[in-house]
Length: 225
Image 1 (cartoon, rainbow, N blue to C red):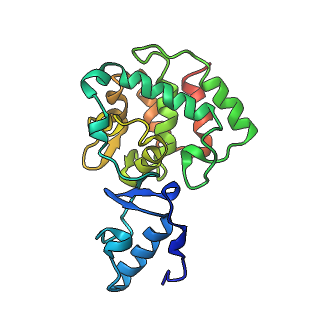
Image 2: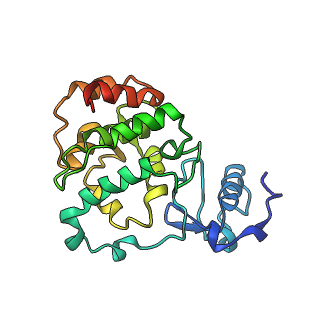
């Protein structure tokens, strides 16, 4: 039982959004999962867990208080250029160290000097407003998120993206809603979301077999600098 984690650490700086419920701290989530798994009457306690009955399938959507993001997104205005802005954001995420490192999130995992050199080459080309030159970046991000190499980005894997992007990119969930089918995103759907032709279908079948550590090398075989 996680009964020894202090609730005094609860602070706005540590809030997380889980399945539409706000938790004051990740410790509260793990405590609630434990309570609910053991059938403890404290499962879903309104004081700390807002009535949410958490389990092992509960997913942290992002690290902030839950917000109604659809009200913060003017999709009628954003729709035309959101895919371009999102690609630029992904480019910045992969290029920058400002987001920190987190070994639990493949998009923030520590990288070797060789990886950084390969990423620099991967990100060197200018992205056009219609997604020109974005293929390598989108391939790499898909490969990284597809942790179990199932050929699909599953809901828990997708959370590694939303945890970094939300709530800043308020329109992201609306955008991704066009890609998701049955809580997963296939490779074809991922590229179709960006209205980009992969051009080389053989890349996709190959990437399903490579490990994340070799994604950069694999992509450079098909998209030379």
